[in-house]
Length: 530
Image (cartoon, rainbow, N blue to C red; front, side, top):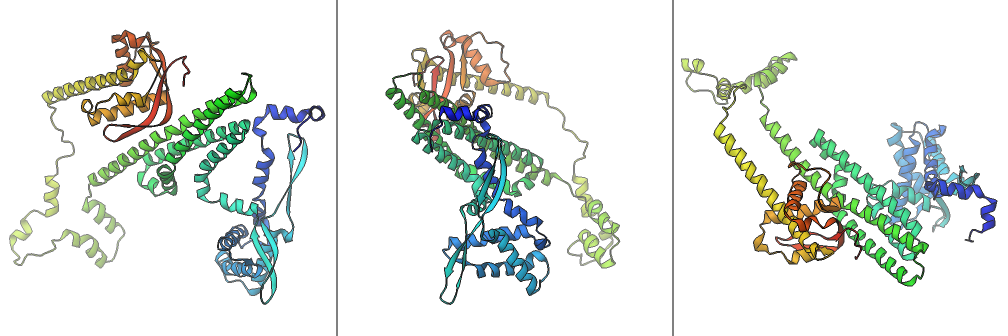
């Protein structure tokens, strides 16, 4: 492709103006062409000959049949396709068509999908260049094919036909993110940094969509956990979280490492600090890091989804077990309301009230003793019964809550002190270096779990405000902020650190009790010594 010259820009100023003003139009022609590939299938709905035979659905089934033959390296002849359509036509028509109808519909469907051996041609207007363009493609490719007894035609899916079938699979949605990551890797290695930046932005949109799907899924679980778990969306999202999330995270780590290496190589090779490539790679690094951080939040969403599902199931089970079933009101009344025959009443309403084993001796006590159902009802506590409030127990519980609250604040201050103290004499510290200072004997399993959780929260916040005064005085409802504020008031050295950024480093860190967390980097504000 020849380079764009100054004369080209003078001849078509509107093209470059549109490209600058509407960057979303980049790749517009390719996107329109991809959408037009489904037009032939959609047009089958309006064909009068196929009306009443579900032409669109039959067309999709035919493409799937041809692809299945291609997967097994089995040539699909024209006769094979006709036999297949003849076999499925009664399923869509609802009746058994005559041989003449079978022949007519089969020939019409094959001709429409192959366009009588010609290319499909669709025209659209290109707003960037201000002219009409034409898209040409085929869904089915017809090729001469020789069999021992005859010559015939072989059908196979074109690239566009395969693309339609692939995009219709659920696996395409799940693998699209990984494919985009691989494409980004290739763009960075080839040096097409502007295109790589656009790919990163598309990855960001994909991450946002996944977040919205998880939020929607959580709302469905809150409304009705049983129905939500039966839907395919939950199973698909659960499989994706289980199988792909960690692999995508590793790919992000490798991409960030590759971008930093590229930036370092360009910096060493370039004599001009204002190089366009350097600027593009710098923007690429910032955007990629932002998207990677958003992707990291999906792990928290996964934990929240699992916890919410467990709680919702337990709550649903608990409410089910606590529902009281009144046999007379909820069973007998419903049975009698329908006025069934006598034998039905006896079987469904009377027999459940009778004892399974009748007494051998029929005496007066049989009729005078309390019924079993009524005795169970009497044993139930009255609905309006309330336990008396034990003031001493209430005071004891309040004291226990205060002690737990104080222990939590002290533990959080201990964690903050461990993270921030090295920065008094240094400008940078990693979690792996901090982990080397930890003694398993000084930390219980619960305290170490709190350390990991605090590190994840700080990573999400991206910054620790290690300075005084604050713009507001935090309350003790947010224990993390409250503990940090109290610590800074007590330790003036830590209060003089200023803003400390928290970012993800390379690899992970193994902590006591077989816990694992990303290797976070704590960096004083203004210091970029990575």
